[in-house]
Length: 186
Image (cartoon, rainbow, N blue to C red; front, side, top):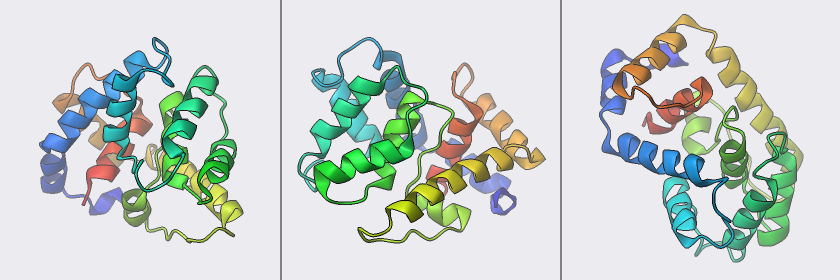
């Protein structure tokens, strides 16, 4: 998969304003997750919503649900994707794998975010519909396993090194670096 990412494309990704701006927001989220009550702190909420592109106007109750789950579980590195997915489903009536993965990845930075760009760049297809919770859970773990395997490939190590050269002192996990690059690869 990353073999298709050319050095020219990698340079373009590293120079994207969205990536550098996103890192500022991501670092704010990580630096403040344990310092504030995320259910009450509107600055934290605004930065989280902007960084993760949460469509709060589209799904009634999703904002409250996201920040409740984050606040109640921010010290639980073992938070399960399926728990978050089901909580969001109860709040919205829709399956929200992207938002569920964003909550999990905020709490446990060794976990990946899944969204349409990650699916596309990993060659996966997302099934839509309310009867696909089990499939969605399986796919989430498949993505995380794929990314962990991809990190063992020399090309991935090179890409992580390039990320570090562009953004030194970033304190990101390698999975998060790879996740951000795949997310920006469009």
